[in-house]
Image (cartoon, rainbow, N blue to C red; front, top):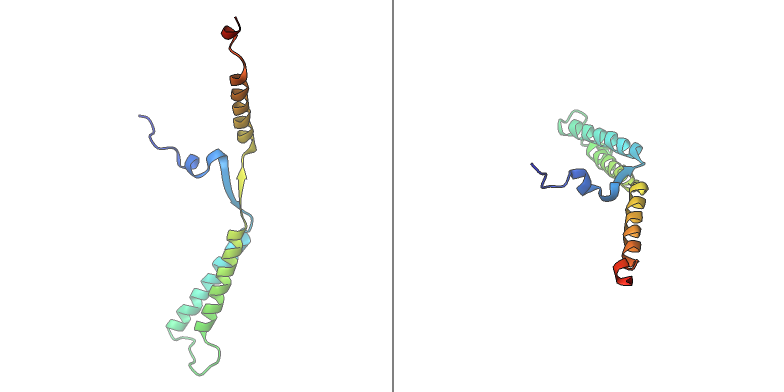
Length: 112
């Protein structure tokens, strides 16, 4: 059987483009800060650390930590870049150049 669909890698990364991230530390900081935020929400919902008369509320801390987590996630996504395999691009360009130079040559039969 022939494969009617191109391979996923070829569809996602034409010309061997690879998406890379340099800021993985931001991803992990975001992950842990969001986990801490979820823990604050859990404690708040179960009323274990609740004091309604206090200025400090865990639900408020949840919002601050969630915003910080989203900021770190933004920094992670901003660190994205696309790496292109230049060897493949150069080989494709050289093939295209070779084809274009061959088409410009006169036909030997027409010279006779």
